Length: 292
Image: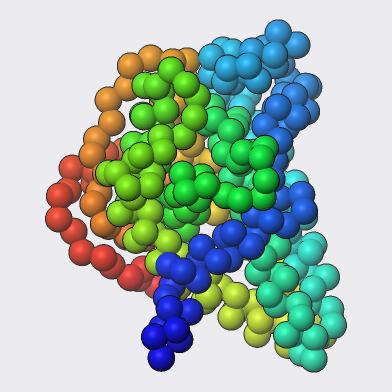
């Protein structure tokens, strides 16, 4: 009985899917190769070299240029994940046991791909180590927060801003291990992971139903995937682009993280960027389920 509860735990469920998706071929983005390829048409060789050695912000690349590159990557990943989802829907109902787990993993894998691409464009450090297939706890934590932003949670917005502030303050360009694993941000990571475990299950169920009818299900599944993936990728892009980390380095003052809050953000991205600083000052809030 205890084991059944553990399996059904939304937080554990999300981390299981995340780690499985991170091991899929082609999911991990090589930062240097991506930046060189993505910036090639819009930046000089000197700007690209400095963006790789330091950050795109340190290279002086305007956010407007990075936005265009980000939009290209979002379009590419959205089209790719939608095509894969549609293809998985073609066999119909009898193939569901084989296709649905793979489809969910592919979907999360493409969320990971776009999260890495956007992070590198907007001056975040390498998220994955080149050593082995394991995902360290800090990377798992920041990816969870990125997913939270994609799903519209205000606490994830505030926590990502906090982590970005820590990165901008440290000399070594790496993720703040302590904050993400057992420090101020860690409780938010756990709450967001639990929230995402529920949301991803709901989404995968909707996709499962759409696959039940061959061919028609394929079209519906691909359309459903596109309709959910594209706005989530755009939401993350807006948030990362609006952080001072994406601009030339300077002193930044960040608010406190909203402790334990997981609230779905129904505001427009631009308004939410301003509202999150006010939310960050809230010291006691309740965990809320999203309102639909």
